[in-house]
Figure 1: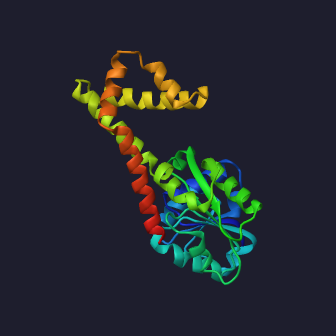
Figure 2: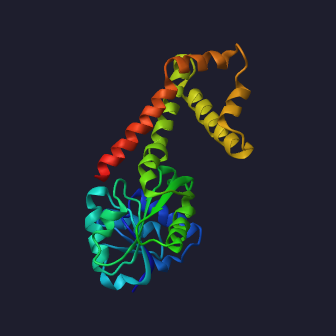
Figure 3: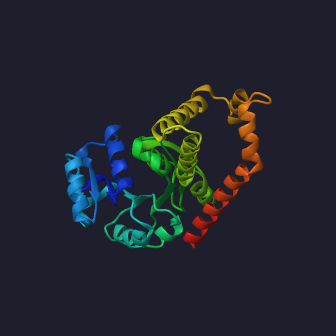
Length: 268
């Protein structure tokens, strides 16, 4: 039996994509399959996704003329998984594997294959992700539309050239960790000022959520919104002066640059 879409790798990212696609009615459960090597995880997936085929391996009969693949395995297993996809006749593949170029995936195939490389981030787990996609040497506009329809089920999608994927990795791919570190630090700051950890946590997370909503809903720039909070000579100005004096802005620039360079190194 062949499927419309097969997700190779049923971990957190693969599971999130499956959930998003089914919730968005991108396909019916019977048109979707998940390939997962771990027996324990297969049991979890089978229980969580009624009607979806959960497979231990990818076989020749699973792939029809229109079957697409989403590659969600760890980087160490990705090229082996790509060779398996080639062996069973896959012609269209979306990769969410960090650091693996379209050229390296294409090299596993004897003939032309449409490979779309993507860099999603972890908020796809709550269908609020931001993903960038870039096409390989045999990709058409229709292939990019197909990839965007998949990742669009779990968030926002932007299109970039592949040379910019490493910058995307350093920025939005790693950005949740940067932001979680900021939230963690602000909670600690509230505790240092005498608040209970629970109260500080509620204040910080609630303000974080509300501030993000202001950015999205008002359409105003971060600079404009920051200026609205910052009265001359006031409390916010005092706090911002300290942050600028400690070169926080420069630290973020360097963090993104370091993460992007690490992505380039992994790609080599």
